[in-house]
Length: 286
Image (cartoon, rainbow, N blue to C red; front, side):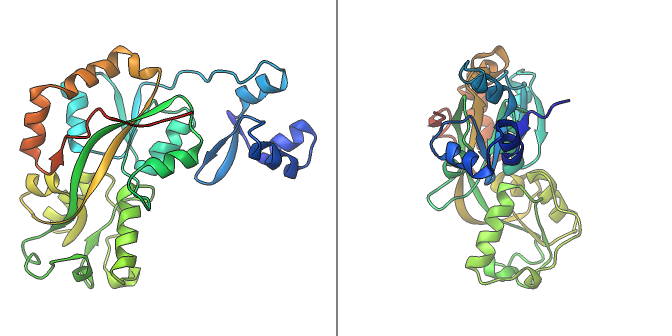
């Protein structure tokens, strides 16, 4: 099967030009392209239509799949709303890449940047037919076992402690790396289990089971597992949605449920959620 996306070299070969010319065409916006994690990719369908003079071919509908970062409240709401959307929790960066490549129609994101959350990553990705909807502001901090709670007051106190990490590509991993630098810690200053946790609940469960003494998690998970929570910051968790999928019945079921009293009560019971941003349009693709 032909690849859905071509590389710069493949496009240069197809057009019988040098790669430098392809980069020039990208710079002027002359040729259909995407920029994913710093790498240029060219959607073959749009490229063929462009070559044949038909303009950019409208991409096919992204599938009804929710991917990206795991959020306990979102996970619960997808079930309770009856939306019937499948899920694949694989981290913010992998979720964004899957959305950009057309493999998912919705993605949960909390990617830190210099000025806030998520916007810079989306602007660098060159997305089309996408809208970023606010989900919630979440309290994030250190989740600790009772045995070390009195000895770990801030991030720098993790030195020499057993810490469960999240997988590469998770927004929490990007944030953890930044906090490590700010605290003057090197990777060798903490002890980490071999296997990372892939969801918020997995990370907290590992601490509760004694596999680690600490993790960087959200307040709701600390409450669920009756662990100590040291708040560090408030982060933005947003929902990236295909603009056409937004108006389909499954997503509209979720949107309607977002405004319900049941949703508000569940967020309060979980703890650590501020629903003020919920439903706000944070960003629109060109």
